[in-house]
Length: 80
Image (cartoon, rainbow, N blue to C red):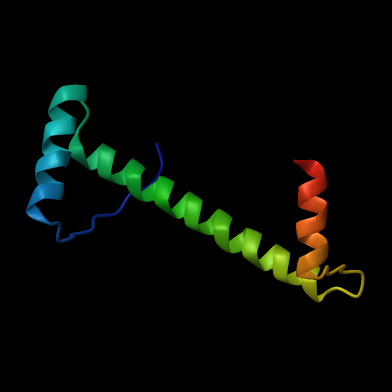
C-alpha cells in the first residue's frame, strides 16, 4: 500500500453533498473518491503541461515548419 498523508480542504457545500451522495451509492469511502479525483486531475494537468512544453520545444527547433493561415485553410479544404 502506498504511503499516505492527511490534508484538510474547504469544499463548497454542494460539492461535499455530491461527494457524500456518490460515496453512499458506490459504497466507496469519500476519502478514496476524493484522492482518486485529485490524482486524475494531476495526471491530466501534468500531461497538458508536458504536451505544451514538447510543442514549444518543437516549435523552437531549427527544423520547425510554420504555415501561413491561408495555406492551412487551403489544405483543410482539400481534406474536407
